[in-house]
Length: 207
Image (cartoon, rainbow, N blue to C red; front, side, top):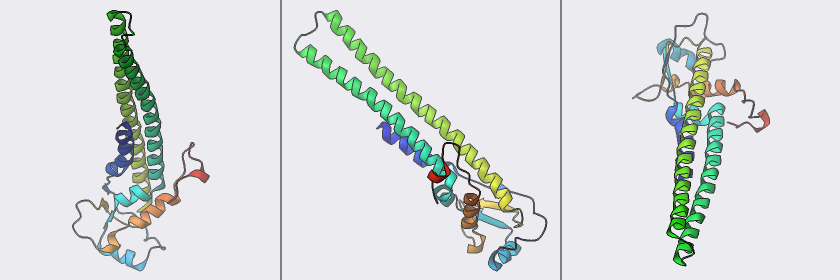
């Protein structure tokens, strides 16, 4: 149960969090010489473009790195909870066995052991709540940092493309294919992606 709660939260939150709608002033200078004729025409007629955030969430290397880290933290938390749960189960079974054969020397001794088991249960519940809060806080911080990075890179990406606004696909009922800049933007993001200090380049997630 703890594994489902912690890991599912880590895996799904990245996709749920990423939502972007940026406006920027029209850039100066000519359009990027490397852009296709189709894209250039689209820019002239459609100064608004859009990106598919679900694709960015799944293909952006930084997003993949975050998901990997959160899943690892969730798995470590699950291991700690499992250890607590196993100890609690063993203590409860031992208590039941001793009570069944009247092994306690007194009612007070039995009550003392029962109180110990209740404290163990409370500690396990407190640990689960603490781990969930810690994971949620770390998740929030990492996702906010990622969104800031996406916004920074988007400003660089559209600098010479003269888009006045970049939207997400959410709420867009119709748009010509040429207004979808997702793949170009993902390539830009990954070309400028730098693994964090604890994510060596040779082990960094790939596209």
